[in-house]
Image (cartoon, rainbow, N blue to C red; front, top):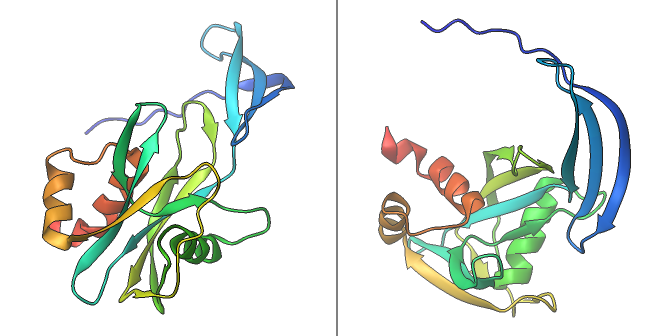
Length: 185
């Protein structure tokens, strides 16, 4: 059995605001490495927390969105989701994002847990939810920077795509793993 060591604490000596990058604000923190005593300048992105929704239809399909991702210059299959607004709780944000991106709503919701967005250099948590028996409530209300195609994919096809690397966005992967966890046991 591996022995767990208590890690030494990194001490922050100062912080400085960096540029505002639309979705994120940059912050520079200077920290003392407890291993060697050297001060290091670290970059953190402050962008808040977000939500992802695994929305299932009465027919057993999962709603996916296909949207262009500038970092990889291609359209990706993803779950509906987005940033939590200031003062908004995660479930309210999940309901809002599902409605905005897909036009669907659900009366039955469950938490699938959460994970750090990218703990290497980002602050923020991604909250995952499942929404069951979704019904169409209206037209999607996309942000100016969004170009979303809605896809209702059979549950088993989503699971196979997950198992074969068919999803590239890590937040979608994490939410789907949580959703299908019972199937994998």
